[in-house]
Amino acid sequence: MRVNVNATRCIGAGQCVLIAPEVFDQSDDGTAMVLVDTLDDSAQTVVREAVRACPSRSVSLAEN
Image (cartoon, rainbow, N blue to C red; front, side):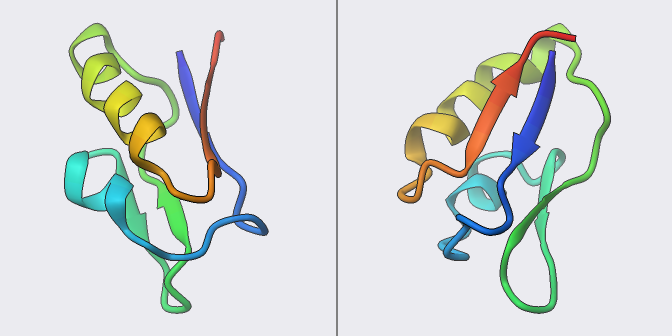
């Protein structure tokens, strides 16, 4: 699976970074950015939680 962040939609709440800091970080302007290209099985559960927690719905998952 691949994780995506819509930077235009992101409001910089940082929930994804708090939930999965190994997958997400925040840029200087506060928008989320993805640190990994693809997710292994162990990271998928925590990233799904980050997707649900995103208040702007800017984090999504896609099949490779």
